[in-house]
Image (cartoon, rainbow, N blue to C red; front, side, top):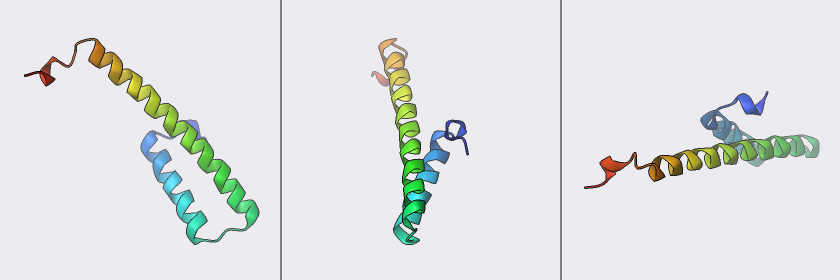
Length: 71
């Protein structure tokens, strides 16, 4: 599965599934390591998307396109 093709919500859901599997399925060491590595990539992807979104929000706010927030 290519993590870059997953959107934020799907990545987050997959990350939750990985955490649950590690906590509840008691995988062997190799499987746990593979799950951990996959989770680390998903976290990296999610953080990148959050940072990208934050920058877009900052641009919108600084451009004055949020006048409807002002009373």
